[in-house]
Each structure stands twice: as C-alpha cells, then as structure tokens.
Amino acid sequence: MTQAITNITDYMQQVGKQARAASRHLAAANTGDKNNALLAIHDQLLNAKSDILAANTIDMENGKKNNLDAALLDRLELTEAQFAAMLAGLKDVANLPDPIGEVTDMTFRPSGIQLGKMRVPLGVVGMIYESRPNVTLEAASLALKSGNAIILRGGSEAFASNQAIATCILAGLQEAGLPEYGVQVLQTTDRAAVGELITMTKFVDVIVPRGGKGLIQRISQDAKVPVIKHLDGNCHTYIDSDADAKIAVSISVNAKTQRYGTCNTMETLLVDTAIATTLLPDIAEAIVAADNAMQLRVDANAKAILQDNAKLAGHISDASEEDWDTEYLAPILAVKVIDGLDAAISHINTHGSHHTDVIITDNYTKSQRFIREVDSASVMINASSRFADGFEYGLGAEIGISTDKIHARGPVGLHGLTSQKWIVYGHGEIRS
Image (cartoon, rainbow, N blue to C red; front, side):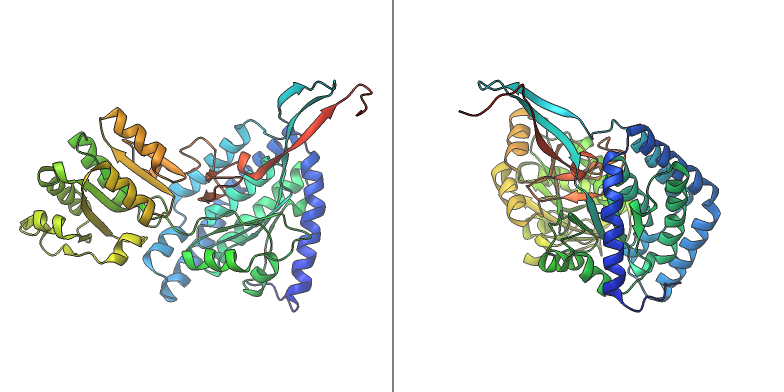
C-alpha cells in the first residue's frame, strides 16, 4: 500500500537529506563492509523469496487488469529463473573489483610534484524506471559497491514488488552496519515525486531514467540534475555480402525473437543487395518460424523477393518511412535491402538510436570499417545485439544503458557510477 504522504515536497527533501548524509558514509566504506552488505542483502532476499514472488504476482494481476501492454508485462514479471539470476547478479557485483580509491596515471612534473587520478563515487544517484523489479536490486547493488547512495523511484505497476525487495535491502544494510538510507525506494507512486527528484540539485548528483521513450524525454527536458540516458533502442543487424549464411540466420533469429521487451532487441534488418535474393528468404522464414505472430514490414526490394513465398503469407506488409525510426518492442521487424556497406552505415547513423548495431560478415576490412564508422554505444561483429547488457559484458549488472557520449556510454556498471579527482603529492614545492 502507498504510504500516506501529505506533502511530497517535504517528503522528497527529507529523502534527499538522508541520501546525502548516507553518501558520505558510503564513500568512506571499505570494500569488505560493502561486500558484506551485498551478501547480507542476498541472504535476506533468499529468505523472502516467496513473499517477493507473491508481491510480483499481485503486480502482474493488477497490470493485466489495467491493460498494460505485452512489453511492459514482460518487463514486470519476476519468474523463478529471473529471481535466481537476480541473486546471481548480486553475488557477481560483490565479487567485482572495487573501483573506489583506484589511483591511475601517476607521474612526476618538472616542478617536483607527483600527480595522478583517484576514482571516487558520484555521490547520490536518482533513478526513475518502469516495470523491471530486478532493476531495483541491480541499481542498489551497483550504487553500494561504487560507494554511492541511491534514491529509487519505480513505476506504480511494480510497487508491491519493489517494496518487498526494498525491505530486504534495508535489512541487509542494517545487518552489515551501513547507513540504512544508502538505498531508499520511494514509498509513494505520486508523479510529483519525480518532478522533485530531478530538480534537487542540492542532494542529487545524477539522474538515471530507464523506461519508455516518453519517460526519458520528459526527464531529459525537465531535469536540472545531470542525466545519463538513452531514449530508445532501434537496433540494426546488417547482413553483409560476405556473411556466413548459417551465422546470419541464427543471429537474426536470436536478435529479434529471444525477447521483445528489451532495448537491445533487433528492430531493423538490413541485407546487402548482392546476397538478398538467396539469403533473405531463409532469414525471413526462420524468424517467422520462431514466432508465427511476426510481422515483416519490408521495403520494395525486399517485398519483390519475399511476396510470393508461401511460408511468409500474411506476414508481410509495406514499410513506411516511420518504420525505419521505430523501436517496436513487439513481434514486428523492419526489413530493407541495401546497396552495400556505405549505404548500411549511412542508414544506421541516420535512423538508429546509437544503442547497439551489428554487422554479419567474414570480411575483416568491412568489419573494421563498420565498428569505426557506426556511431553507437555498442557495435558488434558476428554476434547478437542481445548481448548488449551489463551482465553479458561482465559488469555484474547495469544501472542502465547510456547513448550519451560524455562520462558513461553503453551499459553503465560500477565505473559508470564513479568520477575521478586529481591528487597531488608534494615535498614542499612552491610555484615560482
């Protein structure tokens, strides 16, 4: 049940003050204390597994009653396997090297001083996200390990799940002797809380929005606190004329059909003209076979190749210009036959969202041009775009994926939640 909060401004100011105070303690915490807290949270979650899954069932039932779309329901559901993965991710974060206090680039200057850079926490992170109760734990674990306090505002559709997880996090922090306000999950679904959070420059150092394009656009436009963001995941797979046919089919199927409600799912398939007639039918048939609900929105050249294919009857329609710019999060795929590498790179840089893009090729020169010239946070050769997440990148978890170019880009893990400060060692030197 939502806490009865009569004054959102006063509540959020108190949350901010608590987070700022906690951040100073966490910045000074040693690695052992932070890891002990993460492991204590792990045990609390394991003991409360039935309560958490029951809370998620309530959220799922309410979501269906409120006609949440399939993508949001997919993100909201916390299955047994996802719960296990969530706990495994927590242990992975505990096992990662602690970046805080790391000193690099030490050098002597002609003046005699020695200087370098030390990695430090950002301070207080504010996170606003939809569905995905596992994000509550992922974000909390990364913030704690990197010495940051965090304020979490999940979507109303996941309120019961998030509060159940928050109870375990609080108990784990208390058990380990770390500040209980190091992780605060807001106890209100009032949207006014978001407006307060993104403008509290005195208490919050960075905002991380994670959710639909509309949410992230609103946060980016209204925030006074710096934002780490990506608006959408319009990811491409380009099948080059020198592609291995078997690899092209398997990766295309996985990138599109393994899961729809994720930002690293392929939304546009580009196929080189030179091999489109022979290879595109195989790819299209395999994708439709993986999900009979699949709709292929094709350009004129792809239509000419596929329209008489009996296995694709009822699955093909004409693509509009809007389709090249759309993140579907659904069994819909835009398909375009394209004249070579230059055209593919141009299309991706024009219509993509700078998230994750893939080339399938056995041609080394082309692959190197692709990864140099495609302007995206993750660029891949002969691998599914579905690998673009913190867990698969060895980050333990991720607080989000950034398509920004300043500070953090791509999956944001521990290092993305830190900054660096200059440190100087002297021996009495004075400037002349």
